[in-house]
Image (cartoon, rainbow, N blue to C red):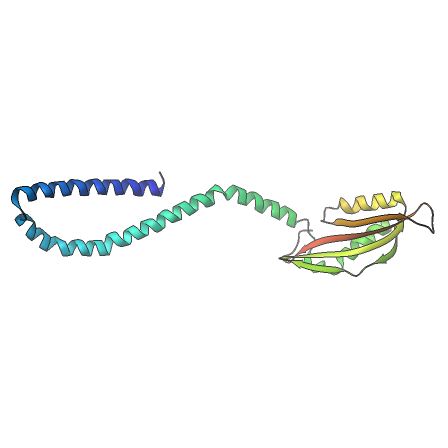
Length: 200
């Protein structure tokens, strides 16, 4: 039974008690008039006012506050599982981000080291661009290379299957006029750094 149901049950009992008491008072008043009520009212009146001011009124407010808190906790409990799942997913994504302390050199290192491994020759590598989005920093560089289709495919597969978050965008390919069998490729490579650190 929730707090609202308990409060409603207490209120119903109090209303029933007051109704019975009012009926009894009307019966006595009908038989004997107002005389039997003078002395009790003189004694009980101030006491009832003090009791109401000291006990009932604050208790009613406390009961309302407690009822609201119980409802709030019920809503929180209802979505606690979703919160835990979202927190676990966020933590998993966070572990795929590189450390913020490596922000200045990390993307350049990934590009040059993997290109060397797959025999890709650079035509140019742009300066690093950084953009802050909330608690994250998006870092990107434009890459221009000359290579073969086969080397390009293996190199991009290595980059895109990285356990660290990397994104290839704006990819364009054209045949090289100078060297048949090779292509000139331009693309942007980006990653994300968390200001609170990463997990890789």
